[in-house]
Amino acid sequence: MASFPEDSEIDVSKLIKLWVAEGFLKPYDQSKCSLEDVGEHYLEDLVNRSLLSVRKKGPYGKLESVGIHDMLREICITKAEEEGFLHQFSSKTNSGIESMEINPHRRLKIHSTRNFQEWSILYSRVRSILLFSEGYDVRSIYVCSRSIAVLDAPHVLWSKFELLVSTSVHLRYLAFALDLSSSHTFPFSSISKHPNLETLVVRVTHGLGRGRERERYRGPLQVPYEILKMPRLRHLIWDASFHLSNPLDDKGLIVHESDIQTMETVRNFRFDEEIIKILVNLKKLQVEYHIMKNRDTWDDFNFDELFRLRNLEDLEMSMLYYLDPSMVWKHAFPTGLKRLYLRCVPFPWENMDMIGSLPNLQVLEMIDMRVAKVSEWTTAEDQFLQLKYFRCTLDFLIMWEMEKEHFPCLESLILVGAEWINEIPSGIGEIDTLQYLELMYCKKSLVDSARRIEKEQRENGNSAFQLRVIVQII
Image 1 (cartoon, helix red, strand yellow):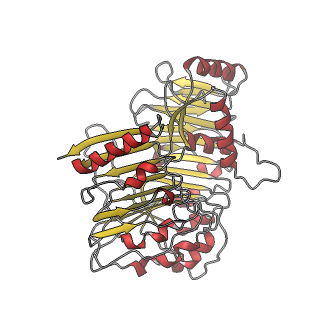
Image 2 (tube, rainbow, N blue to C red; image 1 turned 135 degrees about the horizontal axis):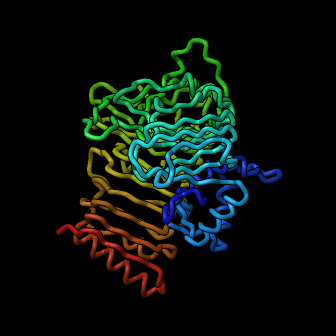
Image 3 (tube, rainbow, N blue to C red; image 1 turned 90 degrees about the horizontal axis):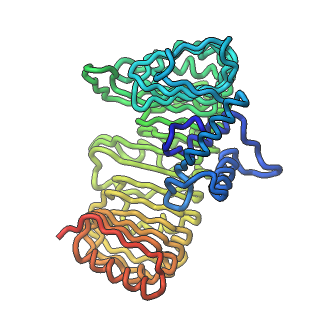
């Protein structure tokens, strides 16, 4: 943790993936918990002992980022140097060239403070390299080590790696940048040669260089589905969408179960039966669909098979471009979902029982719902039993009727641009677990009803309740 810059927010998901790649985490005896679950337990323990501070929590209390006190960080840096665990370089005081004779450390943290810095690591014992650049682009990095397991270099273009990655058979964690303005191909042939690769993080750029016009690349990068055959790949993460090739194009397809747990962000993903059989361990999926009116239909993506992803816990789905108003979502979701995020999905209010019946759902976000008609929504008992966080735009909803028993665990309600409905149901104000109510770009009558709920919560002794109004519309 000392390798992260001073006063930075340390991303919990990234930190745990690094721990896994380093082999620091061991599974509990006779436990089905994943290594990521073990890492979350250790982080919570460090927070409970006040060794780490919480910077950000997710909608249902899950740690998203943490911080470390400056004094404790200095102690960690000192101990890491003393024990030969970690050594830090900075371009403020270093030329960017290190030789094997002067440094025996196996883990390096590089802090690049100049644009287009070049780094050469010339000793063969190095196992892990973490590169931080303060927003600068690193021109190249040369690594003379076949033992490297972690290479976190999100500001280094793939073509600028002066590294024979195909020979680094121990590589488990790889993060790099890919310039789509100069390369329209994914370096799969090189990456697929890493039998131990667990985490692959790709930062997509559209042109680099000072004074150079950034080019626009109009299509997603094509990634062969064979990437799912990599024996230990668990996390495939992109900060822009990619297109996964269809396995049906391969007549010699051999279906096998993949260890992959995370895929984000896939464009126009098809839920084919063969893919479902491969992704049996998938927990988090982020997809976006570029659907054109009069060209695409739901059948093109085989959404009827979505519910077969039995282990899926986190689903983000976005629809872009022109949707046909007659295309209404009627497909079932996996019952194991804990978080569901829908954006621009034409989900009708009369079908909300489909979501409300999900037994494990804790977080629900529905933004810019492309419904075609004005509707009313009446909730029922025995639904939304675990829901803690609800964020919605309430598109085309003019009436919402509910009782407090219908959302027994609700803690946070966030309404964004809810221009159709006139007031929040009074039953919301009677929910004992409610802690937070936020209205953003909502009209006065909705804000007035929120004020009444705030008063009711205060009168009922809920001193922790918070109401936040962001831009009231007259």
